[in-house]
Image (spheres, rainbow, N blue to C red):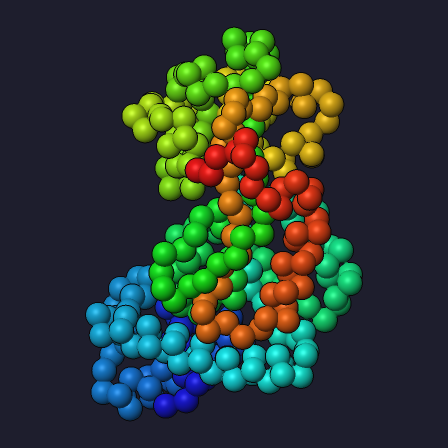
Length: 308
């Protein structure tokens, strides 16, 4: 048994296809299949059910794959210990970011950070909260930017900044005539919200006490904040946007923005890692660049704001 074989079985598990896994691992399919077959013969157990399409792990194979992820993660830590001791920024750093954070935060800091630190190889991916946390625990990510605190004892988090929510209101809505939005003003039949499972949606539904509200059914088919904003601009309904999104709007669009009445709904943006995370040099650079990129008033929670 060797590490290369473990990498091969994880690739097959990811792609559920031997040819695609071989392409990812940059080997021929016969080579990959032979190496996996040798591993199965050595341990005396089948890892994959090759009769199903796509390929599926056996019940025992799922346990083996979980252990393989743990082994490869621990092995990668050896290289990271060396890089950290040398003060090197080399090596891949995989960062997940919520889809409701990425479009508005990344343009503010990412290019400047990579220009300042050309050695950095940060790989970005948009992921929702639960998949991000699961990938962190499996060692598939180095860090995640989310809008809640993790409860798993193997994870740790640090607050980067606080971000208010704003209403984005079409000119045809009665609320457009108001300077502030009150939760009583919001009618679910005119509301565009992200699909269930997005923490952005869940937090606002709780804040506005709309747990039983039936929002527009089209929302479940669209599911994009940017799409909802275009719908509002066309004169149709209300949606919510995060604070950093406001700075990207033109003057005409900003006329549709309405702040909430006090207390204003606010989310806490956290940077989450595993407790055994080692590359603190990269993490400190990331935290510094993000905090420098947002307005200073967003670095603290104000008494006019309420965390959701």
